Length: 67
Length: 403
Image (cartoon, rainbow over all chains, first blue to last red; front, side, top):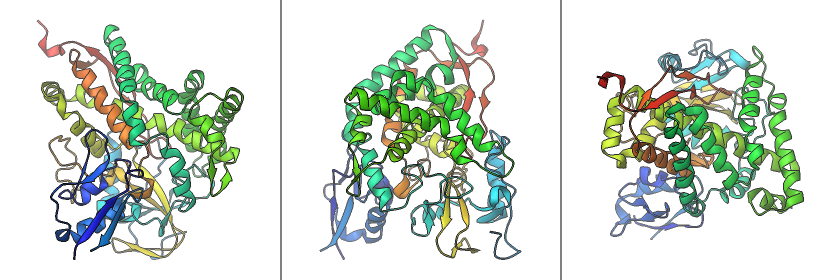
């Protein structure tokens, strides 16, 4: 199963919980402190970690869509 | 409500006891952990103490079961009503959005030059004076100045924050078993009411003035809501940063090896900050109330019971952080619960991280720090906050290097 990962940059507050849940997928921009999906990431490998990242975001800024 | 069964683990823990301080407070958490994943304390109306990392984080992730609507301190009697921490969604979400305006990543980024200037001024003056009480001279003034910039509090108003906050902590701890939340916060609320009136008159451009026209749920905010929001900024906005800054500097003077290492490589500052938040957790305990029967670590907990989630104990769970009592900036401290976790996670986390790292960098630009007297610690203020109350330090080579 693979997912599309969307981050609402207007909601993201730089907590970094997503980086804890899925360090292979997410990172925080060192300048803006806003989360981004790392280039080259293959979303089909990380289902449980991605769902944890989505659930753990304190402001609900991460949305997963099954593709 | 007493525990359901008589064989429940018990622990004698009063969150407001002045005995809960360095260094013994860590033994109390270990006693609670050894008693069981959820241990019942009879104090202050009775509550469960939860200490294991996975259990604490699971509860923080589940606001539907572990409700905040009855309060974040023991006893969860419904008389606290601090915005946003004593609310559940959907109102919590709306309140929190309003407050995030003041603390967004963009805002924190904008504030960086201001933080660097403010911290340089405070630290440089402290160095020129040869040192002094780090709490009084740097750790307290820093967040107060930041609050004038961030929220728009008047400079004279923030000078009163420490006194009225200490009165609140004393008021909460005053009685043996009862806790008078309304009485304890009265002076802070008076101060916030005056600040709102002043902003109504002056209309100067800042967060307080924005709040006057703010809406939640399609209606204007009431004055009581504005007061509660501003009181959160006033108290949570300075107590935590003050304790974090002082705890870091205490570490540097108490363990010179850690200071040497940081001075040799100041890029480690963010790691020192994270590991301090894990190891010393300046905000230690937050309460919830169960909305249905639930099991924590095999212990049945009834609906309506108070539960104290110990972030500080969870951050020293050996199952999650090996050798947890050791301060180790090399460990992977990510995922610690020092800022909480989930929908109530600290609103000021990004600001705090930035402020504390800048502070360490600035200190590294000066001669080494050394202790110049005995550090004194508060008890757990409000059952939660722990930090030095006095931290005498001086600049220059350590005593052992004399002659």
